[in-house]
Image (tube, rainbow, N blue to C red; front, side, top):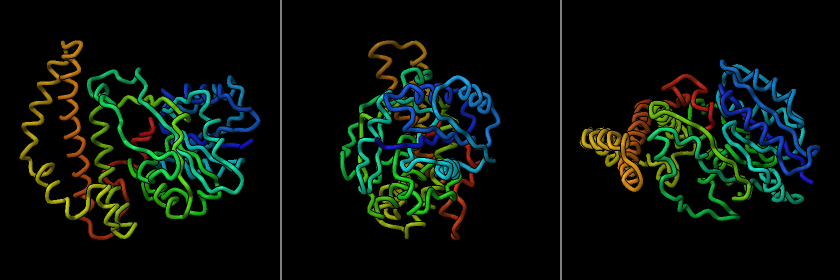
Length: 336
């Protein structure tokens, strides 16, 4: 049976990490066939105390390492370097695994088959505590995902496994991604180019429990805009990648008019304020209607922040370190 190292990169994750580890201790998978390595990426909260408590109380092979804050990509690499087993499963601390998660990942690893496995997730209902959080996953996800030959553009490393040898064959995670965004899809992009077959496994399911404010999301989107330009430049300004990232030169004039000229911003902010006032007292179908209106306003602000980061990066002609708009490593406490 496949032996798995679960790597959990944690930055200021005290509020969610305990549940993540308890769920991992309760897997429907032999205890001697997996281990858990937590990388404390310079946390300043009670993450070390949570880890110490879990080590005492949980019946599983749990180890942790601590490093200065270097960001999510560096934390994942550090965890993989401490892995004892051939398959590495990356799971963010705000991902609360169902009991069959490890088993669902493990069944894809036959002898000598180069494969990586993308698990599935949904936002935990308990995380929908504000109107902004309620608008997340308001509409069904109709994205078509192939069970075999999954597109690398659908890879999210918060619940993703691969063989360690395939990880290091492509150089590990690019640690120049220091802020939020794109380090996971960029890894999927390189794995796909290296001939690793990407699989989609919906039964490898975990609940995503991360509550964020609109301000936090906007900050992360600015970082994502900077990282998108780095991603595109790194891969030779590939036209298809530019279209996926929505930063292809052919798109930028329209994006500038919509998100940077200010022509639509005032009206959409007014609609958002109206929706938020109604949400204070709306119920039933009326609440759902105003959530849909608010969702459009929030989406506009999120994209506006993204293009703020994009234009900041594009104004820098020389290659630059991503994540320059904020302190390194921020935005990973709850994973994404």
